[in-house]
Each structure stands twice: as C-alpha cells, then as structure tokens.
Amino acid sequence: MLTELKNFSPPKKTVFLFPSKNDAMKPISRAVYDRRFRKSVKKANLTSRGFSLHSTRRGLITRLHEAGYSLAIIQQVTGHRDLNSLKQYIEINPEATSKAIEDLDL
Image (tube, rainbow, N blue to C red):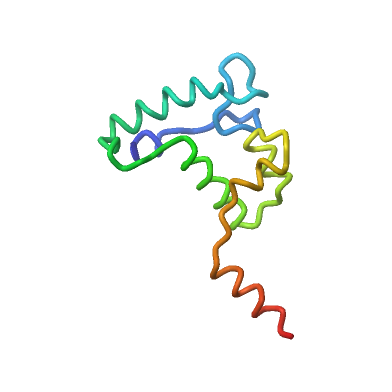
C-alpha cells in the first residue's frame, strides 16, 4: 500500500484528492472509493486491522483541522455540503484543549 501511495499523484486541475474520471470537478463516488479502498486493504493484508472508510475519513479531517486548515477549506476538500456534518468527523485532542486553556494566560 505504501508503494501505491508513494506513486500516487493527484490530478492538477481539481480540488479533490480523488476526482471522478468523468468530471475532475466532482469527487469519485462512494462506491468506487469503497471498492478501491477494500482492494488496497486486502492487498496490504490489513483486513484484520479494522480499517474502514469512516476511520480514514475521520482521520483525514482531524489531521487537516489539527494542521490549521479552515473548516471552509476542509469542507471543500472533503465535499461536505453541510458544515455541521463535517464537524462531527473532527476528533478533539484533550491535550490540545488543555494547551489552549493554558495559552489564554489568565
């Protein structure tokens, strides 16, 4: 799987990491993504590790948020129409919460 990821280069004229073959301004369908994902997990012998579309999506969104990207950018990259549904994917790190409170310097 690592080799496949290293060799992957997203198309240049799109905002999506995995654009549709037919229209680069639309993401691939969930069904296509699911098939490709399951095939890659199986090929890497990781089927027993609990990887799922949900866990990878949640991890991606959380990492983008932790890296400081705005919710508007994350919403565009992930294709969420509703900001509230996007927010449900973000895992808040308790250490980051503690640091934010410490940084207030009250």
